[in-house]
Structure formats: structure tokens, C-alpha cells
Image (cartoon, rainbow, N blue to C red; front, side, top):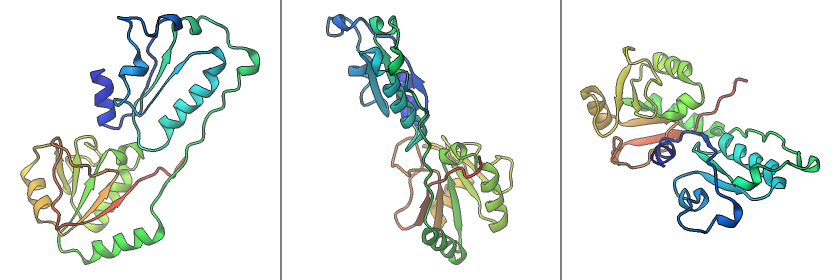
Length: 220
């Protein structure tokens, strides 16, 4: 449960398949119900109560794994159900489509204008840079603009930490270079991060102009 909670906090998309008891024992103490106790710790959870549900439940599970904010998904395998055969007419599973999201052209133009007008800009890189496979694009952006990069702990290694423009990574603590840039910057370009306030991360000054973008991988 601790590992699942940490995966939820770090936006890690994993599929968890815990075994469950027989259906006639679900509410009998002291049997454990993942469907009951894991809610609030995962992005999506659903038990399988009938063999005919397998295709639909697994399709929904992989939809949540592939789309939206990443996080753990749980499918509870009820003991007496998983010992049954799936009827041929219910073997209808199809792989769900991955839906892409990207900033509008206007948002990107505004971000470019803000960066060009900034006196001391900084790039804040989160785990979304890694999920999007955009580490090379981030490095190229930093080198073309000369803007230093700070990485969150989930986004650690979004840029090589030996790179001259790398300020280092940080949770509640960070490097002196990152601390100074985060406190002195006038424009922050946030890539692949929710900027959620948390005691496990650096805070963003309210007077800093922040432009946030959600990254998507456009290459196949």
C-alpha cells in the first residue's frame, strides 16, 4: 500500500493486480478488499465480479494508464472468478487509444514572448519531460536560449546534471544555484509539472510570472 501511494504521489503509471477472496466472502472479516481500502491511493480501481467483465474492466484500466495524469491503476481479481473461463462472446478486448494533448499555438507564442522579454528566466522541469521522452528537446531549448534548468525530484535527470545549464534537482532542499535562480527569476517556464504546492518540493514565488505547458510525445 505504501508503494502504491508513493506511485500515486509521483504520477507513476503502474498496473496492480491484487488477488481477492471469493465473492461470497468479500464482506466477511478479516478478509481484505482492495476495492474498498485502495480508494484514494490510486487513480482508478475496479474489481472483476464476472468473467464477462474482463474485457471492459481491462479496457478501462489501460485507458486510465495511457491517458490523463499518470498514476497507479488497480484491478482486483476475485478468486472464484479468475478460475472461470471467459465466454467466447465476451472476448472483445480492444486496446484503448492514447489521446494527445498539447498547448495551443497562442499559448506557445505567449511563452516565447515572455521568455524573450525576461531578464532572468528559468526552466522548471518535472516528470512530464521524462514521460514525454523530451529530454533532448529540453537540452536543445536550454542551449538555444541559454536558460538554466531546475528539475523536480520526480523530474530528476530531465537534463544531464553535468550540463553547464543544469541547476540541479530539489525536493524540500536543493542546490545553492537552484535556490538563487528560483528566488531571483522573473519568468519561469514550467514543463511537465503540475506545480502543486507540497512540503516535498520547492515553492514558487507568487510574483514570478509562470508559463506552464503540458508536454506530449509527438514522435511514434
